[in-house]
Length: 272
Length: 313
Ligand SMILES: [Fe+2]
Image (cartoon, rainbow over all chains, first blue to last red; front, side):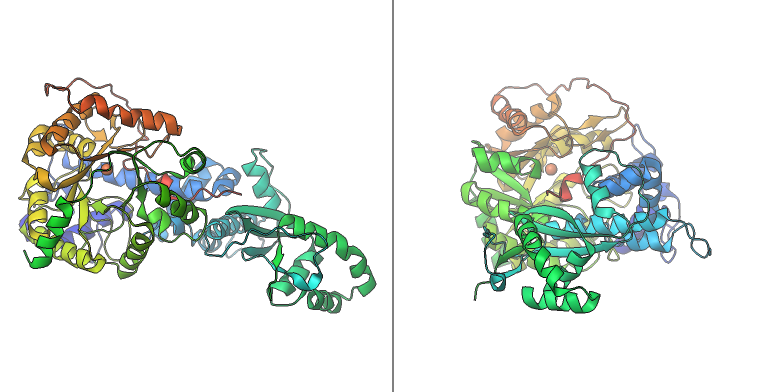
């Protein structure tokens, strides 16, 4: 078969297959020989020419994954992270014009390929890695989400009924201390792998910078109520109901919570 | 060519020359916002901002008010046999409406097929079939954006047996058929020429110089048997020599220094750009010097890390 008979589509499928799947796409009938399609040059064979693209493809995307999953790459160590990233890119090659979503399915992929899948005795560390991957990806999305950020200077004595959640505000509940682990990694503190422990955190964005805060379980549920549309008052009522707290205890601790939430930028003015 | 094509040529020929520019990188956001450095203009990567609802878009809005801006894309994939991505084009047009760039550019390449994206600027087959295919798509894109688009020669690492047209001719035919403009990446010519055995001087001489609205210069890594376009260091001396030739042939056009890996402090980046002034008029002989070789197996072409958001908190 003369090389002149390949259509543009065949040729592009062939080359992409060699880059992404390390082999030509099976449904595209083309001779496998690189020499039939690519010219050699004075210094390099046809295979070497193609190999420059093949090598760069995986190295480039691997390093993007590394920047997107900084803490996870630290937790797994460079070799294991690279192995997972390569397998991920092989399973879910990018379908988007933007690299910002490259890691969108990474947590899902780690879940699908966990080494203890099918075994009764589950190991702990895959759960941790999966949660960490999901959290890191979520942060990159929150960093760039569309929102009307209002410069909010809220006084501590602002009446409760004038408080609402900031436009960028997200709550997380994890089986591991994900948020504190993440913060330790980015602060260069080289944390050990943590033991399982329920943890809660809130993520805000002010002046286009993210704020990460570990919070307590009751605070998480209170803020969750507000996320569902409750006023401060209603969120308190519902918290008391759901957890059989004493209302008086909650009212007693509320000023402290309120001050902390305002300082952390959880609230903005609810303008009528 | 049709009437609109003629119109695009006129627009291309009347585009301003903003001078010497730098690529806008997130590392330099604060420096630029706080110090207003005296760089003539900035080139922004369209994909870094088109989906952003956070800091990148917020910074760009302020920068576009202070500096002339050009939008440079990497995802148009004009050479692909996949249909054009309407969602991408719509966002590109919306961003252009907001930023008001002097022009919009992308590359003569394809990035993927069958809905995949390799995030590389892959080489196109250069023959009659692909020329027709690409010109049809350029017309569609230009009509959709209601403005001419400027196309850059990518750095290439292979040529196809099926190619029958020289790249410099291919680019000229593109401009003649569609009225599009050209972005001459001098470093890419050098890199591709070394990798694929053509003479970069001949390449640059053959181009339609009146359609070149912009140049790129950049650093590369020589690996002995081939050169990788790394954008991570100073411009090689031989590339400066080619720049001198291109400057003379074009009569001088907007010039931008690309630096995408190991990005230095803003002042270092700017100083490297300003070296261009020394090469605008020097009478160079085109005998190339031997370059320093670096045998580094980790060399990656077109680094794209800078395309991923750096999350700030
Ligand atoms: Fe370039």
